[in-house]
Image (tube, rainbow, N blue to C red; front, side, top):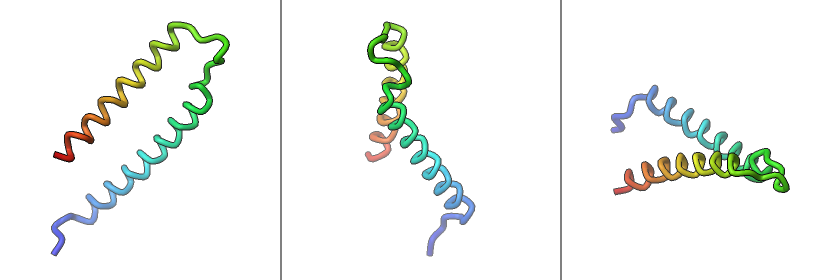
Length: 68
């Protein structure tokens, strides 16, 4: 007999849908060079992408640690 409350399941599924939408948006941004003209990249853009990469690394570390 499941012990999960229906409200928790509904919230969980909503979060999954939101995360999937965010992943799709991230892919669109990446496909568009994050809105930057590749001919005019400067160190500020590199810094922005470094922040994004570090944030994604944190998320993946959280997910990888939950597998253990």
